[in-house]
Length: 110
Length: 113
Image 1 (tube, each protein chain N blue to C red):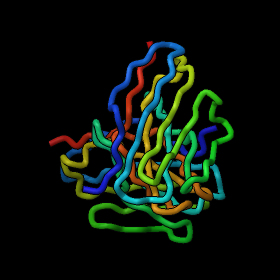
Image 2 (cartoon, rainbow over the protein chains, first blue to last red; image 1 turned 180 degrees about the horizontal axis):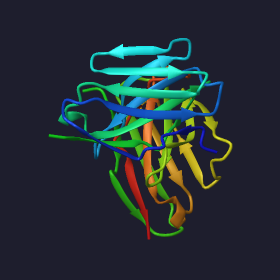
Image 3 (cartoon, one colour; image 1 turned 135 degrees about the vertical axis):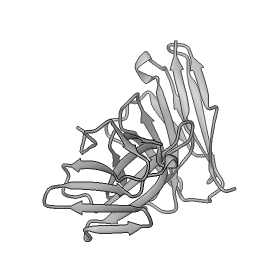
C-alpha cells in the first residue's frame, strides 16, 4: 500500500527555469516530510525538509511547500541548474519510519 | 570523510544460494536501516536496528535476516534468494531513532540467476 506517491516519473526543464516536483500522501499521521536527491551510482542524500506544522521551508534555490488539507507536498527549484539533474525522492515520517515515493527523474537542459 | 559504505556494490548469486550484504558507517550513528528498492519503485524498509535492538517490518519475508555485531557494521543475510529478490539494497543510518534525516550508502545491486 503506497502511502507516498510521486505521479510524475520524469521532468525535463530548461536551465534557468523553475522545476516543480509534486508528491501526494495518504497517511495523516505523517509529521515530517523530506526530499532526497540521488545521483547515479550514489545513495540518496538529504536535500530539504518540512515539519507538518509549517507550510513552507526555503533553503537557497530550494523551497518545499506543504498543503496538509490536500495532503500534497511540492519542491520548487529555481533557477534550475545542470547539476540538479538527478532523481528526487519525496519521503514522509511516521514514528521511526520513512515512507518513500518512487522518485522523479529531473533532467535540466542547457 | 565520514560516510556509509556498502560492499560489494554488485553481487550476483544463484537461486537459493545464501548471500550476505554488508554495510559499515563511520558516523557513529545509533540507528542502521536496510531498504529494498526494486526497479522504478520506492525504497521499502525491511528492518532497522536501534543500537542492538532489532526491529523487523511486519511484511519483511522471513528469508531476510540481519545482524549488527557492533555500532559500525550491519549485515543483510538472504537465506534462500529467489528471482524476486533481485533489487538494489540500500543501507542507511540516523543519529537516533525517529530522526527523519537518514544517511544512505550507495547501495548493493543484487542479481539472482
